[in-house]
Amino acid sequence: MIRTGGYLLGFSVKRRATRRKAIVVYWCFCVWFCSLIITRGFETQGTVSFLICLFLCFSIIAGELGGIRANGAVKRFEGLRHRERRPTFQTLLKNEPLDAEGTVRTSDPMDEREEKIRDHAHFDAFKFSRRLSLLLLVCFVFLDMSHTQNLLHIAQAFLFGIALTMWSLPQTLILWSEPDMEPADEGSGEAQA
Amino acid sequence: MINKKSFLGIPLARRRTRRWMVVGYWALVLALLGLVAVSSTGHHRLFSNLSFVFVWLLVLVAQLLGGTGTGGPVRDFEGRPAKGPMLIDNTIKTLIDSTNRDWQKEDRRLDERDIRERNAAHYKAYRIVVVFIALTSIALVYLENPDLAWLSCLRMPVLWLLLIVAFSLPQTLILWSEPDMEPADEGSGSHESQIH
Image 1 (cartoon, rainbow over the protein chains, first blue to last red):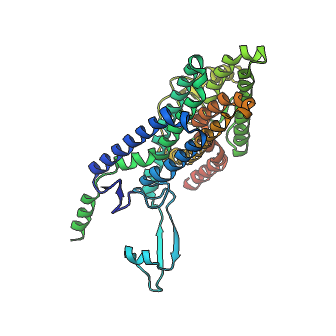
Image 2 (image 1 turned 90 degrees about the horizontal axis):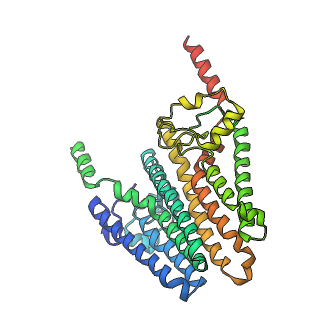
Image 3 (image 1 turned 90 degrees about the vertical axis):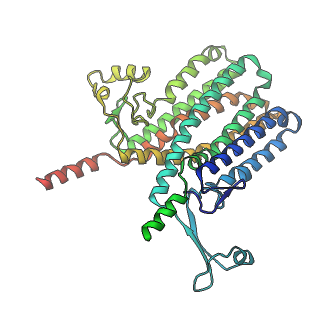
């Protein structure tokens, strides 16, 4: 489920302990970023900055974890589609394998085990999000009674936080819970020997 | 994943009937959200006074399809035994079918196939919910515009819709996509006859 040889925020994803450190750093960054938006973003810069922040968060920061795009730490959830393309300069630099016809073939569909892990991570993430959205509504109803004038800003910030959380929660769960990679490789090496 | 033959008098064996039930469910949700929107404008005194009732009804409706241990047509996702039916289900069930108490003895443990279906439904639902939340947050930004002040009454209904989607979208997908029950029963019957 995790791409071998991948890196997350400069940390290697092979060892679980290292992965967990990377995840903690990632979520600290997200919390800091969200708090910045809540305290300053809406008041000073308005709609455009919000949309830019949304775009940046969704496409770049959350994409680092993978799942939603191909080159993140976690394999793409849909699996990589079969592609054939002509080798480019970058391909040669990355030393990607070429077939007999001189084309690069990329195809990495999910196997049954990976699909099981992916779906289970989404189930757990959904459970958490359900509770989070309930909490949001309770907060919102209470704020509706006391701070009606600031309600819309708070609602946007809450939704933004939930969206960012949901965008990267399944990947986080997978990276957090998958075991180390090296022992399995060693084991297979020994088995082969 | 569906643990009942009928729910509130609606037979669940056929997929087509289930789909109609799901459509009816979402129509009910949208109708209630419309009432919440009307009540939040404050122009209609009757609706304003009833807003708490609408909200309470939404809380009940959000649990109607099951999945969360409340006695709906979809099994509890955690496989927990039912603590008891929820108020609305119990009341309507008593009115419609007072003799049928089988739902109290249901075995709610999930087998491997159930777990696979449950997780797959959550995977699909999750992707929809993420997109929905992203769109909602952008929509709320536009509701801030003074030119669209007349749309501000949609703020609360949109958040309620978010909650209901989060609570009942996987159940909806399960009820929508599960095949008819009869062929499986017939199949098992023929399988039994083959064995004999």
